[in-house]
Image 1 (spheres, rainbow, N blue to C red):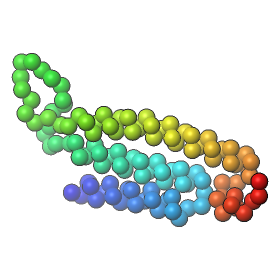
Image 2: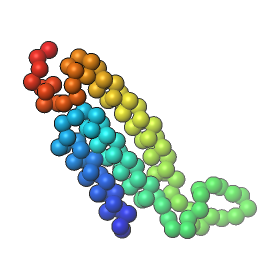
Image 3: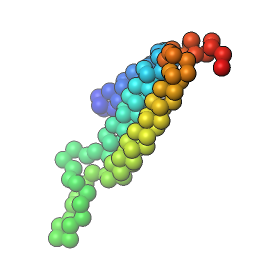
Image 4: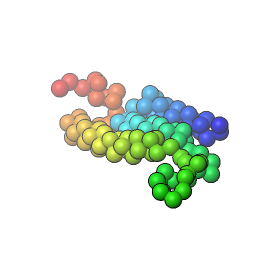
Length: 112
């Protein structure tokens, strides 16, 4: 139960970075922290104490097996999250080249 609470704390830290920070780079880092906390939560849902790997064997029956579905979903989410983070970072670089700042309050005041 403590680990689930720590996932929530990690999610709240990322949410704090998104809501309160005004720097685009810090906002991107907050998004990444939130994404990793959700991935960790999904992995913890499929975990069993003393569980074995979900490998099929014809000679024996595996009774205590971890759930492979969250692992596959998180693996896919990591790849998609990496692509989204790269896209957001590229957009932030283009914004910096155009406006010369990462501060979103200054970017809002500028025209163009």
